Length: 496
Ligand SMILES: Nc1ncnc2c1ncn2[C@@H]1O[C@H](COP(=O)(O)OP(=O)(O)OP(=O)(O)O)[C@@H](O)[C@H]1O
Ligand SMILES: [Mg+2]
Image (cartoon, rainbow, N blue to C red):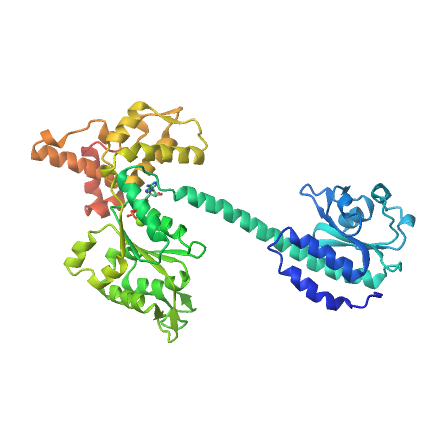
C-alpha cells in the first residue's frame, strides 16, 4: 500500500493538468514522469518509448538524480525488465531486482545508481505497445506492492492515451504546415507588369482593413487568387475563407447556402444547416460571380451587410456574424448597375475597394514569366525536372491571344508537360497548336474569311475549355451535337 500522505485520487489534479498539455509535445513526457514519481513516492521514474523500428526502447525522460545520464541509454525489446514488459505487454513488479534473472544490471552499474525494486507498466494503444512506464524504489525504503502496480497500470493507460493524442496532434500540425506551404505556393501571384504590381499592392493595403473588396476581371484572370491573397494577408487568416459561387445556384439554393436553415424549416430539412456566413464568422466570405445574383437575393444580402445579422431559413434566433466580404465578377458591373440589374446600394457596399485584374493580353510581359512559373510547378508535380520549352514553343506562347487568360495558359503548360515525350517541349505539345500553325492576320481578310477564321478559333477555344467534351461544347455553343461534329470535320480540328 502507498504510505504517502496524498491518496492517488488526489493526483487527479496533476493528471488533468497534463492531459490538457497534449499540444505540447516536449512538456508532456516530463509531466508524466514527475506525476508518477510524486504519486508513487518513488526515487525515480522513467518513460521509455518504442522506436519506429519496434525493436528499441529509448529512455524518453527520467526523473531522479541520474536523469541526464540515462537520456543516452536504449534497451532492446526483451532486454531487462522494461524490455520484458514492452515485449509481453504484461505489467511486472520485482521486489528485488538482484534475484530476478530478467534484470539488466549494466545500466544501473554504468550510471552508478543503486536499484532494488521496480514496478513497470506497459503503455498500450488498443493492443499496440508504444513503450513502458517504470518506477524505481520507494523513497522510504519500503517495497512496492500489488496495489502500487495496479495504480501504476491505471496511470499508464491514461499516459498512453495522452501520448497517442499528442502524436496525432503533432501529425495534424505537421500536415497543416505542409498544406499551408502548398497553398502558399499555389496562391502565389506571379507578374511583374505595372498592372499586376498595382493590383497586388492594393490588395495588400486593403488586407489589413475590414473593408469590402470587389475584384473585377475576365474569366481566368486570377480573381479567386486575389481573394485568397487578401484573406491570407489579413488578421483573419487563422479563421475560415469560405467560397461561394453565386452563379452556380438557383435562388432558393443560394439562400440556403448563404444563411442555412433550421431543422424542419422545409420538407427535406432533416437537420440544422449552418449557412456560409455563419461558417465564415471571424473570417472572410468570397462571393464569386456576384453579378449573377438575382435582385431578390441582392436585397437579402444587402440587409445582412447593413445589419451584420440575419435569421436562418425557418429560424427565429438572430445570428450575428463578423465577416469580411470579398466579391468578384467578370461582368461589367457598373453597366449592370446602370441597367438596374444590380442594386446600386449593394454595389457601393461591396465595392468599397475595387481591384481590377488585367487580362493577359494587356500584360504581355507576364506571359513568359507565368509560363516558366507553371512549368516549374508541373515539372515538380509530374516528376519531370529537366523539361524545357523549345525557343519556337516559347515564341508561339508569347504571341498567342490567350482568350482564356491565365487559366488557359496554365492548362496549356500542364498539357504540354504531360504530352511531351522528350526533354524539350515542342510546339506540337501545345493544345492550340492547330490554330497557331497557320496564324492569320484579320487585317487582310474579307468578311467571309474573317468569319471563317473566327469560327475556327472560337470552336477550338470552347472545345479546349471543356477538355474536348462535344456534348458540353455543343451546349455552350447552343448548336446540335451533330452539327458540331460536322464543323469539327470542316475545320479539321479533330485532335482536341
Ligand atoms: N498572377 C497569377 N500568378 C499565378 N497563377 C495565376 C495568376 N493568376 C491566375 N493564376 C492561376 O490561374 C488559374 C485561374 O485563376 P482564378 O481561378 O483565380 O481565376 P478567376 O478570375 O477566378 O477565374 P473565373 O472567372 O473563371 O472564376 C488558377 O489556377 C490560378 O492559380
Ligand atoms: Mg473564379
